Length: 35
Image (tube, rainbow, N blue to C red; front, side, top):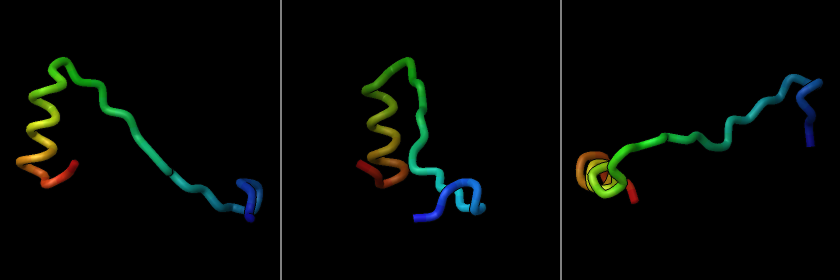
């Protein structure tokens, strides 16, 4: 396994804060085809 000192970096996740979870889930499901 390489370390950051060897120049390897991986971005494994991200976070999106939302006000309306149901609307957001519908958007990701229907518009983007995710979930």
